[in-house]
Image (cartoon, rainbow, N blue to C red):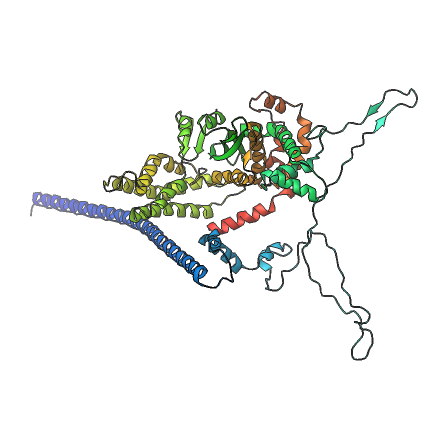
Length: 592
């Protein structure tokens, strides 16, 4: 074999080697592609399993609800038959059994299983080391004053039945009860000392009296705080407060109490306007509305007015209520003038003018959307439960995120970047799958135009961009429940006092609701803050904040900032609202 043949053979071998390497590379690429496809398939399968599990759980919940409903109806029928045919000795109205839902009864049962509710009164021992017993609660809080009542035997009872000698004391067996000492009124007598020069008998001067919440008025700051908190925090109408004061030994007519509250609302108005100015600087605002009757003496009837609560973000954690005579869009449009950020609310069309520009983005509430699907379960159970399964899956993700990234303070601060990233990773695939299912199913012509299932499809599709938007930022919420809880405050109040007397009374009530709700939102014990507020606010009557409020312009002055509830609590930590902390922990335990 000559050199030419060797060269050709060498080239042939090189060519074969190159082809072999290319084939190996192609095989490696195919293997890598197969592995990538396998990973994608595994991820899709995992997510599909989670989604199917959510749908299965939703169907199971529907079946359980139906079973409970059937059991409840059977029980009611049995009770009705007993009322008609059975013994009449136990005259209990079976309708009273409907006052509690199955969920409420289950919650009560769970609390009873956890132990005696009186155990919550013990605060001297750590929670993990407390021993619970059925017959004894334990020591009551040591901070409470104690009165020792000593029970002894008489001289005759102390005689020994055996030898007749008098028995001696060898110990004490103690037990405790919790007693109530009613509140009491006292008179603060302000004596202003006069001074004069004994030599010239002139230049008389008198010590100044501190400014009062109501000039030349009867109530001191504590009574002012009690009156406001009783009506707007504890929902006690003025006629009931009249009864309470009468039991304490002082007759204060409801007309007088009404005048006090009007004056106090005018005093606190600059602080609430300052809260509004700061609230409008929030990145996100939650809002809702609820109705209230207002007297219209000229027409001899009542009008339906509105309360609108607005809640700021974690940097501006204030609640400001607005009062309007109707539900027209002018109310929120005027209040939110100058706001730029996210507005989380329901699908009320009056907000559309606010979203029309490029300053405010709409964020919808998934709880509102879920309500439509829940109402459609009887109309189209299959589609309704599939949609509820998707929403349940999204809610499960939010529950997991609350556990992984808990709130760091009562204002809601948390790791927002991590929350947003997790939503992008876990929630977006579920939302895309949900949207694809919506687009496919809503074109089915068998769905009647005015049926509940059609309403659910229409609402969710029309609000989809706003429902989807919560995944953009970690500080946006999956639902608008915080605003829903705020509208409950005047809703509970109107069941007690029924109506507001005038437009001025409505605006005054909005001021008071703003104070009480802002205190509770920031974990401040409301009475202590209100008492200090009505003590110190009168000293600012000549300040810039009051002048701006009187001119009905934004209160840009920061002279009242020390009185804001979050700032005030930093300097007065002993006035943390303890029961609020307990309730927050209980809610967190239930959600996790």
